Image 1 (cartoon, rainbow, N blue to C red):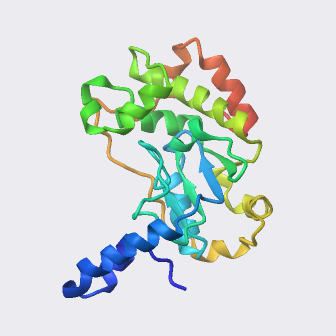
Image 2: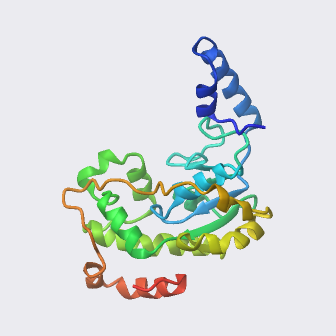
Image 3: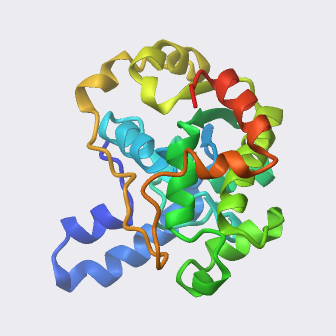
Length: 240
């Protein structure tokens, strides 16, 4: 059966019957919606969109921030396909563990994540209105520093630490191919075919701060949290 979601319904039907069809779809979604079987968690900016699209392209549908949303878990979300099995979302962390959901911790090189969150202004109060409601969610669950770069560094450490408390199932996004067997075992489903359907990298966005950085590898060494970052990077298999 085709994986239905709101987008596919809109694209597949002619305009005259679309309003009625959408109303019917929402009713069906309410009646059939189920919690995800698995959640891909991490810091954000770790490739969560890419992994969700890869699963979807492979026929094992995984939404992106459609169950675990800035407003909390949302079962009755028409943007989430009826047949969706998982959700890839950093927003899931405060609501896990859940005995009904297999949590898998996805990590990415610290420099890449910290540079991305800084350049997108995740912790910059001057551009918070551009990132609502994600900014509000982050501030509810994380203590911001006055220095946005230090906040980005601390975020990588502290959010990943929370993920570690939820699950020991972890993989590097850079070594996804080498972890297909692990993913298959964790989810109880043969995923070896997904290499044939991998999507292009969709985890890049333009920087929105006034003075974006090209490299943070030297600057973050000045912060007292750097030694902890070194330890975490080594645990995850990265060299800083």
